[in-house]
Image (tube, rainbow, N blue to C red; front, side, top):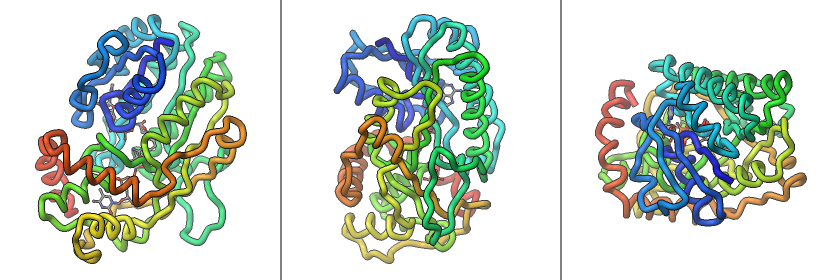
Amino acid sequence: MRILVTGGAGFIGSNFVHFLLDETEHEVTVLDKLTYAGNLASLAGLPEDRFSFVKGDIADAELVDRLIADHDAVVHYAAESHNDNSLDDPRPFLDTNVVGTFTLIEAARRHGSRFHHISTDEVYGDLELDDPERFTERTPYNPSSPYSSTKAGSDLLVRAWVRSFGLRATISNCSNNYGPYQHVEKFIPRQITNVLRGVRPRLYGSGQNVRDWIHADDHSRAVLTILERGRIGETYLIGADGERSNRTVVEDILRLMGQPADAYDHVVDRPGHDLRYAIDSTRLRDELGWRPRFQDFEAGLAATIDWYREHEDWWAPAKDATEAKYRAQGR
Ligand code: NAD
Ligand code: DAU
């Protein structure tokens, strides 16, 4: 297939592009606006006969129409992705996550393209720490932040386009990813690069919040499985049973980096901070046979720490501006 990957210069999109080029015969075009979160260095060295890059906005209807006409499938990762930014300035989240997705599905329906929409478990809101339930495909939508509400809006657009216009789409909602090429604004890379710079990690609020971690490679493999064998119109939740409190993750990072486990600071909490996410991925496992390969979080985290240690040239250019933004928020 010729696959158009939107947002392929970002964290998960670039991991997916590497995965496709390493493990399949598919051809890939990346469409990416190269916002502060996009980085061409994440796509360096890819084979020119199977990979091309187009700089542009997913809300540019003419460009999107032309590109979609020329591809067999679209995998849509492009988004404004950071909750903290959405609390400061929601506008770009509406423009990209809602209007951008609308622009893509309009073109996909015109050309009868196969469309896969990447979304997040945050559309379901949050769970109590002691709730025995986890999110399933039947959990009602209840997003908390400007970011998650625009992702929820984009999911609903895709569902409506399937039903009203016969769009050949699938949706996946995944939990928190970790791995190489993640921007230093996000929790795990921020703490790793802080420690590498001799700065103490920063934990929002009490640190009891729980995230359900999955390695980006496992996410990529799940997305390809859904693209190739998922049922049209269906939603699949992707998760690897990786629930951990933020405090535990910071302690793991410090220990793996040879620091005392309590060498972190508590900072002001995120407004509306979701307490716990947890995914039940039974449908994806039973229907499509997907299984996560990274079962040992500490081993995956250690490999991620090594990656940031070895790729300071990749993350250093964004570090100072990111920390300046956090300082202004008191975090
Ligand atoms: P990211 O912020 O690292 O990357 C986003 C990419 O999209 C960047 O390369 C950016 O330049 C590009 N982009 C932004 N606006 C654009 C526009 N208007 N037109 C074209 N390109 C644009 O994000 P990420 O963490 O890799 O997340 C990718 C997708 O996965 C998002 O849809 C996000 O909601 C979803 N998701 C992320 C996670 C996670 O843990 N990071 C988990 C589940 C789902
Ligand atoms: O669940 C999937 C979502 O995971 C994706 O949809 C989002 O795109 C992605 O950014 C991520 O959202 P979170 O808000 O969970 O991720 P973030 O890395 O911002 O924060 C993870 C947790 O760590 C969260 O509880 C807030 C906390 N945190 C974050 C930072 C940056 C800290 O305690 N300290 C920090 O410095």
